[in-house]
Amino acid sequence: MKWIALIAVTLTGSLLLVGVGDFPEWGDAHSAANEGPKLESGEQIATAVSQSFLTDTDELTQVPNVVTAVLADYRGYDTMFETVVIFAAGLAIFAILRVFGGDEVKPMRAPEDDTFCEGDHSRIIIGTTCKLLIPIIQLFALYVIAHGHHSPGGGFQGGVIMGASFILLAIARDLKSALDWFSEKTFMRLASVGILIYAGFGVLCQFFERNFLDYGALKTVMFSSEQMARSYAMLGVEIGVAFTVTAIMFAIYANLSSRGELKQGL
Image 1: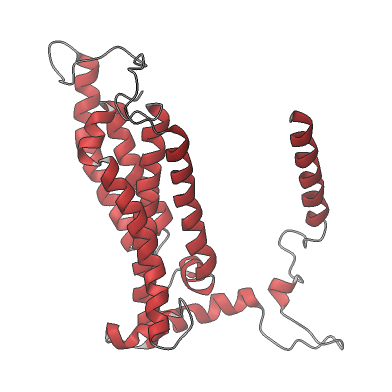
Image 2: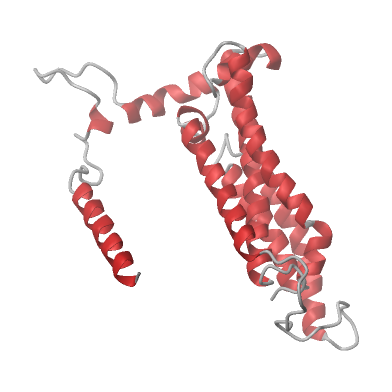
């Protein structure tokens, strides 16, 4: 089996290296992305893709952040399936590691008192600091999600920050404390809801006889122009992405740190 894996990795790596040779040089001003398509005579027949994104995105989508517009609108299919991949990764780890019932397994560490008292100064300092920091971290995560289509940020970044806040709680105290706030049922449901929100925007566009994820079709239900409808819809799908990323990040940590038992953790 090791030889088969070695051959597969070597072959795949060789193909990737051959493909890299066809890429334009870094920052090449004459690459296809920077110059756009040309006739055989050399005459340019269209604006370069990258230039079109930079100059037209704000007008077409009312989203100043070109990166968000490209991710959530122009290549919305790709981003939706990236979110599905994250969801599938969480399900895979759940299916492999999650343990239900069975014999008692030796704990990974000795049980500790959950309270911050009786001279346990290190835990008092860590616990108090986390109580102060976690609400601020979560507030910042919400800002990154809500403002991601106007400034750097978005659903992936905000979701990671929000998920990290629950992981911080689990590390500072214990996994049970984090699960009291964000239980297994909650984070699995939230991960599924995030995917449904994203796909739901696409399906809703089809009800108005437009293409899947063609957000301009939602101007009727959003009581706005087509451009603003695209902006509002991008915020909606970013929220869906944030739900899934937050839930799966914490789900992966919870299962890995507790060997699938969701009892003690690290």
